[in-house]
Image (cartoon, rainbow, N blue to C red; front, top):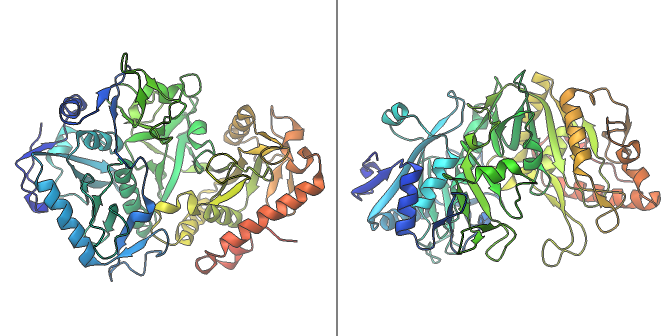
Amino acid sequence: MSTLSLESHNIYVKDVRRNLAPCSLYEEAIHYERGTTISDTGALIAYSGEKTGRSPKDKRVVQHSDSQNDVWWGPVNFPLDETTFMINRERAIDYLNTRERLYVVDAFAGWDPEHRIKVRVICSRPYHALFMWNMLIRPTTEELKEFGEPDLVIFNAGRFPANRYTSGMTSTTSVDLSLERKEVIILGTEYAGEMKKAVFTYMNYFMPKQRVLSMHCSATADKETGKSAVLFGLSGTGKTTLSADPTRHLIGDDEHCWTDTGVFNIEGGCYAKAVYLTRDAEPQIFDALRFGAVLENVVYDEGDHHVDFDNTSITENTRGAYPIEFIENARIPCIAGHPENVIFLTCDAFGVLPPVARLTPEQAEYHFISGYTAKVAGTEMGVTEPQATFSPCFGGPFLVWHPGKYASLLSDKLLSHNARVWLINTGWTGGPYGVGQRMKLKYTRAMVNAIYSGELSDAPSEKDPVFGFDIISKCPTVPDEVMLPRKTWDDPAEYDKTAQKLANLFVNNFKTYVDGVSEAVCDAGPKLS
C-alpha cells in the first residue's frame, strides 16, 4: 500500500490508501461495503445504489471566460457558474473529510505517452477504486513514484447528495466539470460509469485543441501490418460484438484518439454490457469476468454465487469492468497505425438503409454528425413503432465542442491518410421491424471481413437515389438479393415511402448543426422528393 497526502486538495483524512492491488480492494470492499461479494468466477460483485446508469441531465460544465466560447452549450453541456461549482466542491470535500479512510487511484488516460494525462480519483468506496484501477492505464511502480501532480482530479462523493436548493441544481445528483480547475465533482450518484465518462469528456475538450480527434468507438488492428479500423455505433448496433474479432488485435472497445501517428486507446480496460451474456455468444467478455473484474448490479444465486445474466430485476444496464489484458488478443500497448477503414454501424429498424455503403468524406461528416440508429417497438414504454435516434458523433452526451469540430477533424484525417468510410446496417432488411427480419450476423461479419481484406474497395455499386451514397451490390459469401434494400421489400412503393420518411427525419435532425458545418457537408445529406 502506498500512502499519500491529500492536503493539496484540502482533504485531511490520515488513512489514505493509494493504488491498492485488486486483492486488497476485494478485502476492503467485502469488509466495509454491505452486499458486496464474489461471483463463482472470481469477479467482485458490487452495487451502485439508486442510480444504475448515467445521469446526463445532471451533468454541468463551468462557464468560464477562458473556455465559454469553445463549449457547445445546450442540452448536452448545461452551464454552471463558478460559485456554484465551488459550493459543490466544498460539499464533496466536507463529505470526504468525514470518512475514516479514503481510496486514491493515480493512473493514466491515453496509451500514447505524448498525449496521455495523469488522473487522480479520490473516493470512499473500494468498488469505485477497483473500477477505475481497471478502466485507467495502470502505472508501473517507478511511474507511480514519479507521478507528481495530476492533470485531472475526480472527487467522488457520490454517496452524499447535492443540495437541491443550490442555484442551478435540478436534483440531488450533480456531476460538475471545471475545465480551468481540471476537476470533476460527483454528488448524489454512485454509478461508477460517471467517473469513466468524466475522463472521456475531459479528453473530448483538450484533445481537439491539439488537433487530435477523440472518438467514441471501438478499434481493432491487423495482426501483421498494425493498421487499424475504427467502428462507431450506438448501443445495440454491434460495435462490441464486431470488434471482438480473434483474427485481429483489439485496441479498445469504447474510447480512442486519432493523432498524426495513428490511433490510441484512452482506457486501460473495458466496460462491457453483461445483460443476457453467455459464453457461447461472447466468450471473450464472459471469460474476462474473473478475479480482478467488477460485476455491477447483477443478480446471483446466494448458494453458489453463480450470476444470472438474464435477470434484469435490478437494471438492464448490468455491466462488467476488467483490464484490457484480460482479452487474449488485446494489443499492449493499445496503440495502432492509422485506420484504413472507418465503419459507421447503424441498426435501422425502418429497413431502408443498405447492408453496406461507401461514403465520400462529405457524406462521412454528415453521417458522423447525425449518429443515427433506431429503437424498436417494445424496447421502451410507449415505443410502438421504429423510432429514429440521433446522437452526434455517436457520442453526444460526452461532446464538449460543437459536433462540427469533431467532424472536421475526422474529414481531415480521412483525407490525409486515405481512409475509406463505410456505413453498415445491422438492422432490418425486407421491411421494417415487425415485417422484415434482422440482418444475419454472419452476413455482417462477411461484409466487415471483406472491408478489411480490401475486396469491397472496388466492388460493384449502385447510387442510392435518396441518400446519395454508393450501395455495394456484391459481397463474397453474401447473397446478392440481400445487398440492395429496395429489392428485398415485397412492395417497392412502400419502401420508397419509408425511405422518404427516414430521409425527412435526417434532414430535420441536421438543422440543429448547420451553423457549425460547411455547405458541402449540408448538401451531402439525403434529398427529399
